[in-house]
Length: 367
Figure (cartoon, rainbow, N blue to C red):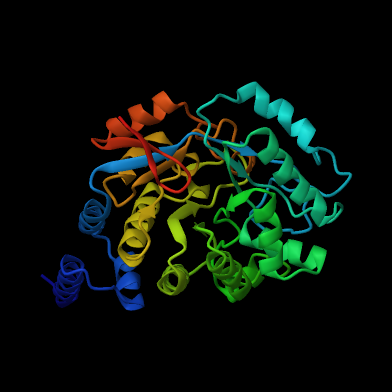
């Protein structure tokens, strides 16, 4: 055995000891895990942490994704969903137009609307407020999860209101929680390279979620990995979330999403590897000791890798979705949605216990 191998095994044993005793991992620990090729040990440690937190339960929600507009002032290098005003395929829907799509797929057990959309500067802030209000009036039992921190920052510029004033206005209209998008990688170097200079900065993204948590709102956090970020930047992204969670306790779940290629037929060399996906899920479970859940997003992972992810620290399978558009516009090969029965099958097939939840992880039914 080489000295390097011996030292590596010793270092892994030290991290395993920390995990065993519930000690927090450092940035250096996280980078070491990324640089290690011992995926099985990393997965075993993450599985141990997840079982400690959540047992064998894996959660999902009966939800529907909605997209009111794809017109966007941003030009993020990885996005294939956005359009300019007047460009072919560009659209901006009224609430009444969205009702037609919803009513086609609506059923009484639907629990959540997940709204993702562009930053459209051609309509006023009131347009976004009215859409939330009208949705809530027509479907009062459905929780509205809408507007990433980047959108809240955009609304602040659009309206002249502070983050808290924007959030309170949307909450008064019926908003219950923010999705985690817009975070990408919380690194100013990355954001500059990926043409995110006009999008919410690292500090602005964190400040929006801090403001939401201070208003009593629980929110979600994501990481979009697999582009130009360094391993150190991935870990620093996680530690910044961990620090804010120490401060506010407001994050419900962490969702690591791998970058999708530009088209559905792109070869494997253009895609984040299964190895990197599983390792990132496991490491995020180990690093984010104060966030209850890590999500395996089947839209990005595909169905079978999602099943494997439940043995690598993931405790959530997202939801039914109905018709996902953003990842699929960028080449995702997964289904656009799944039925409740398919999600139950997926979770049971991984030897786990399916639990239907609401947006806030209150248990609705254990299967």
